[in-house]
Structure formats: C-alpha cells, structure tokens
Length: 234
Length: 234
Image (tube, rainbow over all chains, first blue to last red; front, side):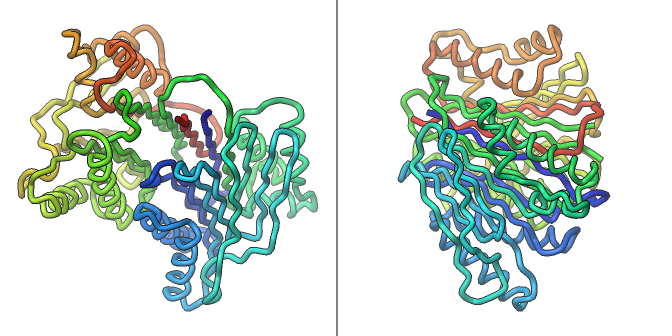
C-alpha cells in the first residue's frame, strides 16, 4: 500500500505573494501531515498570518501533540496575537501510522471531498476559521487508511473561481467526472481542478488557490519515499 | 525559469525508522529551503536527533535567520543537549529569491556535487557534523540561480553503499554518466542513484540513504507551484 499526496498552488493574479501557506511535515510517531492555512485578505499581511499558523501547528505536531489540539492552540495564539481581528483557515491532513488512519482536521468553511472508489462524500459541516473567537475547535474526520480512498481539500480561492463572471465552479462534479473517466494520479487531479478554476477566471485567478489531493493505493512497488517540488520563478 | 527539487529516501534494511530527516520549508522572504539531517547511529535514537536538528533549523529559517546562523545554532543546541556525545550531519539547500541564489550549507563529510551543464564540481572541503564541538560552522557555497545548474547532495548511506562487498559506489561517475547520456529530471537522477546504491547492497541497504537533486531550467510553463509526495506503507 502507498499514499500519494499532490499539491497545486497558484497566486492571485499579479500578486507576488500568496496568502496560502502549505507545508508537509513528518510525524514523530510515524506518517506525515499536510498543513494548509489561508490568512485573511491577501498579499504580505495574509502571508505572515498563514505562515505563523502553519509554523505553530507543525511545531506542536513535531512534539507529538494531536492534530485537534494543535489547531486549537494555533487559533488561541492567533486570537491573542491579533485581538480577534484576523482570521485564518486551517486544514490538517495526517497519515497517522500509529493508528493507520487518515485524520482530517478542518477549520475552513470550504468542504473536504472524500471519495471511496466512485462514491463522493462532501464534508461540509459548519466549521469556523481560526482566531476570531476564544472557543474555536476543528471538525475532525478519521478514516481507515485503505486502498481506493481519495481526499480533496483546498483553500477558498477554488470556491470563488468564476464567481466574478457568474460562473462558479461545480467542484464536486469536476471531481466526479475525473474519477469516473479514469484513474487519475493525485497530481493529475489537482492540476486539472486548478486549470479548470484558472480558466473560469480567464487566466487571472481572483484569489490564491491551493489544492491538496491524497490517494491511497495498493501497489507492489519499492519502499522508496519520494518527493518532488516545482517552484516557478518570476 | 523554474527550480525542480527531487528527493529519494530509503531506510536501512529491516529498519522501521530512518535516522535521516528531510523537510522542505518556505522562506519568509521568498523561496524555499531543503533541510536534511542524519543523526549518529540508526533507528529511533538517531531519528530523534535528526528531527530535533531539522526542527531547530526550520524554526530559525522561518524567522528570517540566515542559513549559516541556523546551522551554528542547531550545532550549539545539540552540543548542549547531548554533552558533545552525539553528532548529526546537516545540509541546507536554499533557493533564496531575495538574492536570486542557491545557498548550500554543509556540515557533512559527504561532498556536494555541483553540475553546470556537463561540468561536475565536487565540493568536498573538510566539513564537520554538528554537535561535537563548540565552534562548529558550515561550509557555505552560494551560486547564481541560472538555467543548467544541477546540485546533488546526500547522506553518507550513499557513500557506504557497496562497501560491505568491497564495491563502493563511484558517485561522481554515476552522475556524470547520467548527465552525459540524457537530460534527466531530478527525480530520474535521484531514483537512479538510489537504485544503483541499493543494487550494490544487494537490495538490503546497509544504512539509511537520502538523496536530494535540485535543477534549474528555462521553461515557458505556467506559474503553478507543485509538490508530490509518495509514502510507501509497511
């Protein structure tokens, strides 16, 4: 069995800095966590907020703190630092090899899609971003780590794509169409969703967009961990 | 122009935990850093040491601390924590978009290979691992960020491959052969070096091995940042 994770990320049009921050970090007891935060507004201020939140969360995860507790701590720290005036969304997707589960923590109005083979569930329970109240808690979903599982999560730039022209994206349909037609790799799925969104915005994304796709597969491959990163330069 | 980074990583044979830790982190003023540490010995103790060092370094980089200062701080912290009894190698490879350079910091007897098109330079100035003395400093090399540059760095598992059978790997030759024959992607290059090493160890790596390849290319592609991770499960 193997887990593959893919990320596709683009800045708001003509913006040098993304308000989205994403890091992948190793868990001290096995597995890894993807941490994605989107700071309120855009540009440098938003970047500083999302970096602070991601930094706080991965620091705590590295100490063995549970995902939910790390999200609450990041919320309280942001609340205290910014006097409840600045919000930040947070998603944590963890491959936890202690429990053999995928743990999804969500502080984000944008839903998470969970696909088992051809079935798609949209997790859209009400969920508040971090930092705006004292008692913020994440919505947590724990899933067995088994082949055929695909998880798609993203920042709200994807939700807003096309709205300017009155053509918002039907994200669930787009995912369904790809999963039915073929067996896409996570990178194909994230790239295709991002391309769709950028098209709806006529090549000029109205907001920062980050998409994470996680997929569990049966394989008989080698035991090599791999990572690849592409950084386009301005 | 774009930068691509690839990592291939395998555990010592029959070892559940790698003493190598690698993380990629965003730099607060633009760009990213790859941080690779290899803790002394292997297994759980070595993992704890390399995670501590990587955690320390990326925490400091996130605050805007320069790579060299972060390496020195991690060395002093390890020296103090372990009473000079435990060493840890460290490599930091940064794409610094403030200076438009690649900054390579090395606290590792293993060399770094720097390739410009077909020319290969082996950076093997004497360099000490962290934690064993008070005055440890990294060897730092700064290179202009320009197309045609390829950098290869690794932990000493690669150097040790094949030694058990008296057939150590000629790493420089292996890189040269690949660069001359074709224009390999970073992932092809790292995978090929790792496969070569594992073969020399007859499929049972004698040590944890991590290989990082960084390549700068001219392209006219999109402005999408991408990352993909593969985690094989036991």
